[in-house]
Length: 256
Image (cartoon, rainbow, N blue to C red; front, top):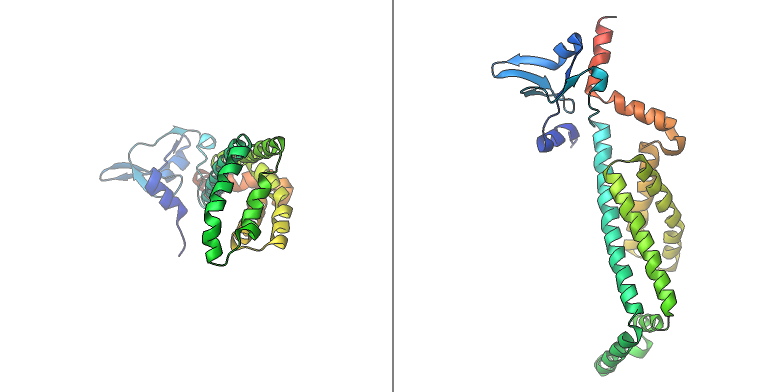
């Protein structure tokens, strides 16, 4: 089923109407009804009752995202939410690492005490906690230096900040955020691939797949780094999607 992004957005946010000063174009966007005047919505193209939301020269009409541009904006905002949620989660992990670095000894004693309590229980089920990979990994972290853990916490905070900045920029459809997302995500792809060679999991595979698709989508759809005509072609595509631009072109063609 094909989604009508224009009408879906108008149903949620309302129509956007504009009265251009040019008479020919103004007549094409205005209609008289039994309930009063109506103006064509710049997003969905339907006529909406009431006075226009703005007026002026056609070239000063608001550039309302519609069609493919609106769909791309929806995808960008989905990625923005994913980046922001990931950033907040990493902040929590960084805080946990920082707190642990300041209380390693107490946490070690707490862990060892509970390990002594549960050791006989697990032994009853023929599971040796002293040779458990999970327990061994936890015990290794107790040997990390305080300075090392602080470096890890700071690195996590920097990574979280990048993710949150990406999320905010993508939500606002900023081009610099698209570049940042592509570069930052691509930098971590080799690490994610290396982790898969160590141990395969569905979470790692899903994360890698999403990140690769995100990089390819933003690169091609937003025409970054000069791809598919670069910024000039991207801006031309946006303007060609404007209803005012379409109506102006139609008006010129009709009188040529």
